[in-house]
Length: 230
Image 1 (cartoon, rainbow, N blue to C red):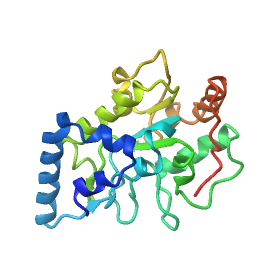
Image 2 (spheres, rainbow, N blue to C red):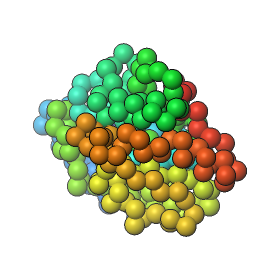
Image 3 (cartoon, one colour):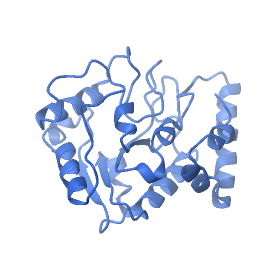
Image 4 (cartoon, rainbow, N blue to C red):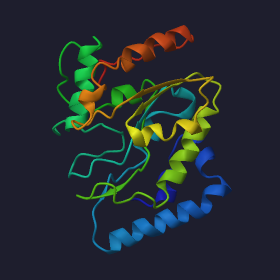
């Protein structure tokens, strides 16, 4: 895994300026020290490139924010976009339920051939995990190590933007971020998490993808082509 400082240097200028602020210096150092300890202990860390979402979607291009929790912890799954997997990797259950809701709301006609969501990211959908790394095979293993401070900083900055955005908050973890958001300027959509444990309680049928596009167009912004992958 490339050191975080080097990865930060390669980010679009808008994100780099935001994240290299002095108030985050101690957090970045503590996080880098923790990740180094994980490596020295022989743990595999996923993904190798945690800032993929920021690389694909510069701050000035963001239209929709979909908050995930921590990355997939299975081999070959996580690649830095929340809920997304690379082509050739079987879609996890939560992603399958996202596709079911897209079909339910008429945004796609059939299940996609793969689960790579970079086509969304390149249109302005920020697929952000609130914790950006995980130890292989151990869900939640990198929580409370500093990532939440970093991503809360990002979310607060997004909320302060004058550009109207849609925030999709799925599940209780994402909904805890609502106090960081300016509900007067942006559209906040809440639903149960798409996990098989909760999707049947209101995620399927929530209509978020259709509602987001209608609102974006009303705000003078172009809609997202939810059927565009890669």
